Length: 240
Ligand code: NDP
Image (cartoon, rainbow, N blue to C red):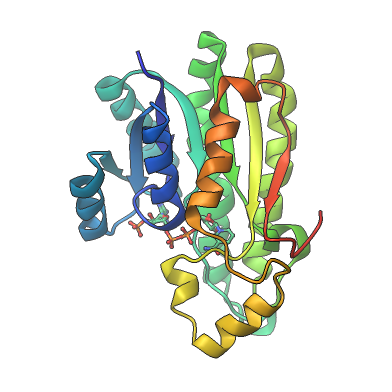
């Protein structure tokens, strides 16, 4: 029987590429999303992958969502914590609300998803947790004190939990993408995009599929000795 993989924010952008790549690799995939029903429906129509709506910022909703996925598809073996948002502002203009929304989604979200799943992974003595952090969690970014703090927190979480999971064959790893050609990045004015690309040694944006292929490796049985690691996939823009 194929293993079950759950991808948060799995219906759009990088998450959609991850969901598709895991399906192609033979997993039964569940893609979670927050509220964009139209995109989720189009994604299911295109791929046949089931989508599930809840907010990763809500602990009880995550616990209920995991229960529902497991009842419908079977025990989850792979969790990809990909859901993320930005609420950018220079710090002197950043509101407590902008801070809270990003921390609740990008940092607490990975606790809310991983914690209810953890006892099952320990019982089954197998698990793969893959956290999608960011280059901006490694190096910091102007107008992203909230986002950089949350994404750096994801890396600390990864390294701590890797130590707790190891004895039970649960690996916990992170991927730090650089600039990837998703709707978000393609929506910025061309001039700004060109200045971003000028900072990337390979001379182009990354493709969502390039992050997805890192996920497929970390999820595989071949990656059993890789835990607590951070894969930087950023075209050479930053060496952590
Ligand atoms: P998108 O904005 O394209 O997609 C975000 C996805 O996350 C959507 O499916 C969205 O659901 C979902 N989501 C947002 N908030 C929640 C929530 N509270 N609960 C559940 N799902 C939620 O993002 P990207 O594909 O660009 O980014 C994916 C991840 O990669 C993020 O963690 C981001 O920080 C990280 N990243 C992205 C980079 C880039 O260049 N794009 C660079 C480095 C890191 P819905 O469709 O319902 O809105």
